[in-house]
Image (cartoon, rainbow, N blue to C red; front, side):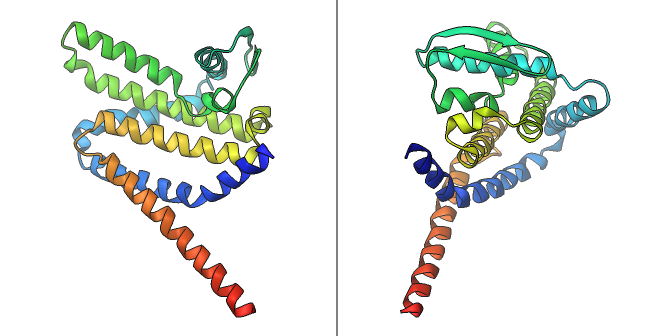
Length: 228
């Protein structure tokens, strides 16, 4: 029953998924308009796939952060982690209990990027490091690109049991994509607070989703009426 309910949730969120993607693209437009300050970020985004596909695929660092995210989220939820295994291309975490958040967290939480941002913020409280902002933007772009590419390969190339465990592939994929869109939007808002209007984008997504479902429902009702 729980799996079916999650499937329905994913189904009803499909229009939201489409509108969220469209709004994310729109959020990038004002950022691109400030190219002099934005280029380090996009340079970092472009650098990672260049290294990934030509030099080294960074599989072990990804497995490490993936499994550690499982473990940390389980700990935050009050669960007991009994074993963590990390190998070159795979790993696992044993815990006494789990939930959807714990299972899917590594697929939408960019662990390395969050860690780097926390270190930068802590350093900024001690001294003025404005001079290093372009380098930090490049690092954020690099680590976000790392997260998205590694997540894509993990979901595309392997049959992840996490997806079934979280409530089925459709529910899990919809949740992962929506969560990643939200994470990226929040990152853009933090980096470019004046240019990125996150609240406005959220309103557009909600209105667009409701309008889409209103159109769908009206069409179904009209079809039923015509059949009668």
